Image (tube, rainbow, N blue to C red):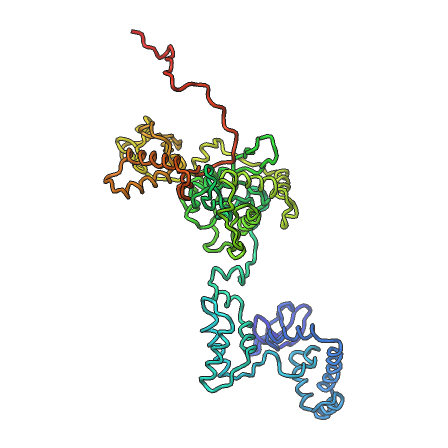
Length: 585
């Protein structure tokens, strides 16, 4: 028997203690019976094979094994000479004496009925009969011609085996022999070698464990995707491409906390707008008192994101720290760690494929369908449709994992004591997640993207050449938000307040056009003049290109709401001064 992994001989039993002697040192010790183990008689693989034989054995084979066991045990134990006992057992089973000796050896290691189950006739299935040389040729061919990228077919591997055998004047193996050896390879090895590490995960990688949250707002996942639908511009109703969709899902309830749709690739602004929509209460685009209502909102305890540059930026990092949100990054190139939001994206894209202008997931399934020609929805209309799909449909469908609807799971979590928290100042909350830049205060103000900004509060905030933390909204560069010494953001407008509001994309496009014209040093007047010319061209165009139509669209629209009533003030007339504005001589 074994004690602490070493063989010992049993000497005597004293109650719950056993007296044992070490087989090598002859040392005697008393140990607990629970610490003793039997000597391993067979390898684990052989023991597993016997268990499988026991499971698969028919009643006839099992009865034969029991009869063999009774006869073999009589041959192993008895007062008669061993030769006579073996001879009697051979006569009883109608086999030779050597067969009885072989059965006795099988039964001793260890004594189990399954060891005497009759083997099926013929060679064992695990045995290979091609010989060492041809087995080596097959393995080499599999290594060189199958476990490579791009993925060649199995037939190519078999042809290589035949070619190698002919070079050595060996008979070629059967095709099925080669195919069976290929299919017996480890699936993880095959997927990794033929598809790459990342692509093989979805096929062969085991993914134990789950990402769980017990209550609402405990963990929120955010991710982006390029929506599988073409949208049109709002003027000419012609295609301008596919929009980007950002989604935030509450892991515990599977509710969608918020989303954002935009034309540009995801960046710090898309993350900020998605977080804003997730945290703040939502206003129904069709009216605040009408269904469907979008109820989930609130500051999350933790946000789980991937490793995109927009999720590692200073804007998101500082914003989450400011509001006590724990920012978590999933492992690099491991999309399965974001399974909840990835599954949500798949669900929504399945619904998007029903829209006119859908691009579908696979080009082979489009069957000549021209997505650009069939596109019908503008960016604002697609945003409103997405609102209705999430708030009116998804939240009220039974979730397969939860066993209830996300809306019901959210209500249950709130009834259990979860209270959604809101930021004290919603406007400042959004500013806290806008992109960050660092600039030094110049004597004539702040400079950003060749535009000068000034406000009388700047000299109070900082001294000249002192660095400042600045946030900006890429949709509207008419003002910057500068962090003061009291951790308060100050709005700093254009130095020339006559300048029109302009987006960062429009400004950079104007700068690119000026550089192409090679007009020397580019100043602020040239940039805004170029932007005005471009705006006029887009306005006059009746058959604009896709790029021009994209520039003419609102960059980040919200669901459509009723426009405010027109003002009754006539701004063309001179204003009448108030009495307090008149100076008396």
